[in-house]
Amino acid sequence: MGPVTAEVFRSEGARVTLDTRDLTVSGACEALIASAGPIDILIANLAGPNYSGRTIAELDDDAWRNAFETIVHPLHRLVRAVLPQMRERRAGKIVVYGSAVALRGLKTLAAYSAARAAQVGYVQAVGVEVAPDNVQVNLIAQNYVENPAYYPKELQEKASFQTSLKRQVPLGRLARPEEDAKFAAYLASNDADFFVGQAIPFSGGWVQR
Image 1 (cartoon, rainbow, N blue to C red):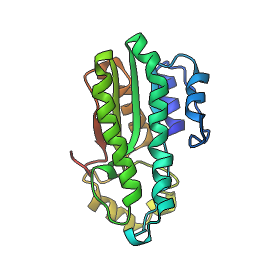
Image 2: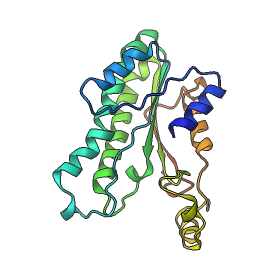
Image 3: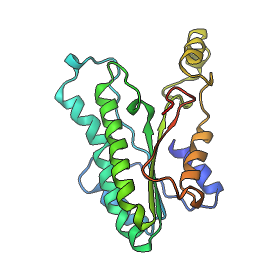
């Protein structure tokens, strides 16, 4: 979602700073925020291993720990570092690209799902804490968004995938990345000031709460 989000935000007139450094390194999150200058909008797009297919018996401590090290802890460090300037200005938006698996249980996906659910709980708590300072924090709980890593063209062309997609997603298709990024742009705009600490499904009906 990083490149397409940058495109959409630039088309809306934003000055965008992209960063792909390893945020599990000590001090990396704080250094990123410090190097970016004044920040009106923070988009947290944190990826991590999903360990799909591992049962609880196969899920070792390292895999469990790594899910939180890559998805959860950097989120807190980024938010903690950027909030002082937003609170001082009494204006700011934080949008987190999360996952709809935090809202719907899937077997053999425990570590990833738990880490994504931790993001949801964090956004809910921080959202209500900083709302009085006119800072809005929200999360897009996404799934079934076009992505060459998850949904390569050859997979999408398979009849079995199309059948599964129609069974799983009421809308019957994948979302275009631009749709997702434009939703993030909306949540980052002043038109979305009344959204506070929300985890909003973006999954074509796969999750409805």
